[in-house]
Length: 281
Image 1 (cartoon, rainbow, N blue to C red):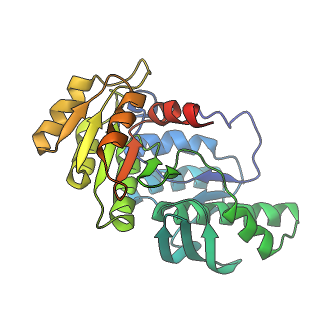
Image 2 (cartoon, rainbow, N blue to C red):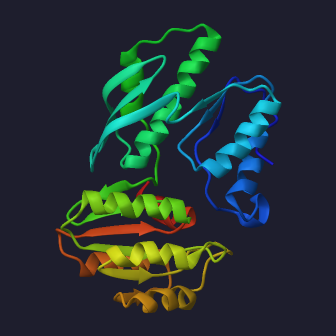
């Protein structure tokens, strides 16, 4: 079902596998891996990001059937010395083709180092196939100028207001892990609106332990989880919360309550952060 399938690719990339869209993709990581592997073309290189062994085996089997060579994170390329700040992410990259020290990307988060390593590897293999040479300087410049709205994007400071489109267990886990490293001594307030077809319990299990307070609301999607449904999960953790009828009002309440040293994170769905982005363009 992948939208890239009408096109003949030079390189195929599968970054990671996590449970999402179970009704269309499948209710296990193995089933989702099988669906994702549908982008693999005959004899076309496949780049695999960091993922668990069980879904990786599914992809490897299909790649083998199509005689598609695999370039795998941890085997053919890797990153190390990752450092994350509100200005972005710095890391070292190494593959059989290239070694890069202290690469900087303006994207925030340890997971963005892994994403960038996949992109660099795919690009190198593309260059090799097309017989093109590009300088290391160009690669460094490109990574420093990536624009990816809604991915741990800081909209303002004092207080720091961040939006992130994390909407499944893997995305929320990455967000929570990065927030703990970035702001170990700060109070973190969440504005949260999730879709009802997500694994709500898992998401709240990850957010509540690091939340000083959660402002629960509902985005405009027809798939939005009801406010009361989300409140039930917060109550089980005993975290302070407040409700608002829409996302913008929830953000307004948070801004009125926090101090200049605190952090506000708006997350739970791409629909949720899109309502914020529409107001700041």
